[in-house]
Amino acid sequence: MSERFKYRDDREAYSAARVRALEALLIKKGIITDRTVNTVLEFFETKMGPFNGAKIVARAWVDPTFKERLVADTPKAIAELDLPDGMAGAEGEHMRAVANAPGVHNLIICTLCSCYPWPVLGLPPYWYKDPTFRSRAAREPRAVLAEFGLPISEDVEVKVWDSSAQIRWFVVPERPSGTEGLSETELEALVTPEAMMGVAVAKAA
Image: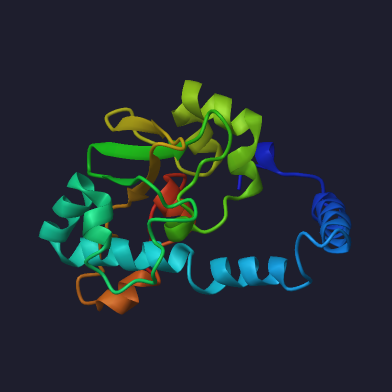
């Protein structure tokens, strides 16, 4: 991750302390139980997360017609796969996929806040919500991608897709070269959340 978006080392501890205090207050008032937060976290660790996105991308890599359907009507194509119930809910409403190609690289951002397709990418990282990232990625995406270690050639078009409550974008990265002999399951292991955000590319193991 770019040093520009790195937070202080004590940020996690500070945020965790605030969360614990808020959780304790909500439990005391009877709004939630001591299991509520853990249940939500477990849901996004085991049912909704980047492992779903990896399955979708791997299928698109091995099945060009599925890839076409995925870009044309993302929810309908996703419904073809054996994925957990609820893919269209809990921040998965109105998901849309865009596909990288040899002459096109896609980047997703949210200039307003932090809209993000949780069912396929998991919970958004801190830097995605950072005002500096959100504004600079919209104005100078090539510079920001270079800071992430991903310089984009001038002959490649960079498209920036702004997520919102109406549309939550994710990227189908290009399939890495040299992976022709890998199974669909093996390909899933090459897909990262960063590649599906457009700040990285999928790389062969």
